[in-house]
Image 1 (cartoon, rainbow, N blue to C red):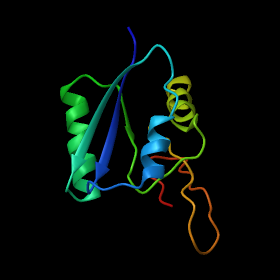
Image 2: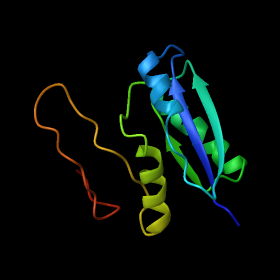
Image 3: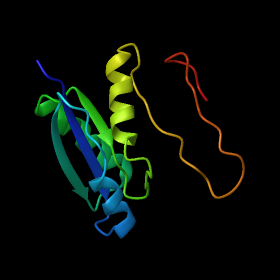
Length: 117
């Protein structure tokens, strides 16, 4: 059976053209079934909760959040993240590095479910 992926987009409704283009050019890994939902006008945490519940109700194995303030310039970003988590079932969550405008950008790695950052 093919894995089913939900691409969830929490948004206030207006996005930059660069974001829309970035979403459009993303390569989707083959052999997967995809659903996509837009969650409009909610706080990010509420939108994520709604998305996870929607995924559970609709048989999605994976949820990927594609926030409206992130513009991946790598057209393989979505495919790399989805393939990474499929190939490593011991991983519960996977994400990209989010650059900051100030300070040093450091990846956050949690090695234990109970460990903090």
